Length: 343
Ligand code: KG4
Ligand code: ZN
Figure: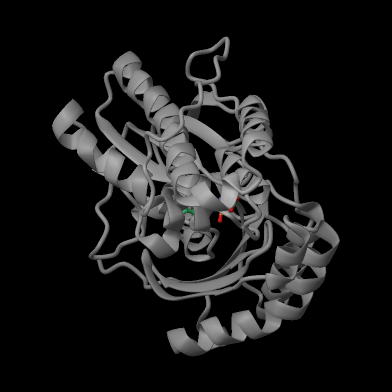
């Protein structure tokens, strides 16, 4: 029996990117993102401004995604949207839009957990990605989250370790801010690090009661004190050493991440290892993970670049699996700024 072709429109609005994508089954036909430059001047995301920008962007971004996919609204089988976790004012825009469109078109509404979506981005059918078998380990590293998961199925996620304070993306962005770089600073640290010496400076690894957990607030404070101390000796310390500082900070953060991931693999005996989330766009984490294939005998999974930072295609793939399970919601569903990984 031939399977029906399903078209899903997916919407992402959890933080500061407004995304819309159209999927034909598990393939992406379009994946549009409107970023929000307005936050750069403030050194971080301003929630009130983010929701206003989503309000402005959502209609044009959805129109563009349908146009590029060459799919008419009447051909859609379901609307998937990010229910949470994220900024409430941002989530409400995508949630309300998705509800209205699903009522207007009389098609199912599918709420999606943003954290599941980062992980399941690996299951988007794309020639440049391979799909991990279950169970596999996934380290989700983003501006809001840092966790190591044992992924048992498309629906079952077990948290083995997670941050007890800041996310690793915040460690990148806050360090960048201390260095006078604009928000989001993660990609700029990555760029500068390519020209620097990663062994120029060293920063100690924070300890946590659960060795698989992370803590980055102490790391950020250590960088602050280090810079203050050095600037007393040389007022131009930052500009004279920018690339070396970036390379050293990045090396330390990557080491913290990889040490936990190696421990998780040893403890579980699982050697299929994936990364996901915005920080998995980082060139050093990508090359270091790849090197583990020889060093540790891992089989590694790195998402295609455009599926790492916040995007709607990853919301669409979760929507696809939920559609197959007929896991729909009513229009009474509400956005949730905090959401358990399995909800
Ligand atoms: O997944 P994402 O787009 O949004 C959240 O759900 O948080 O992740 C954004 C984070 C930001 O902290 C940004 O600085 C970081 O990902 N990021 C990077 C790189 N590209 C994005 N961090 C380090 N190196 C990069 N190349
Ligand atoms: Zn995200």
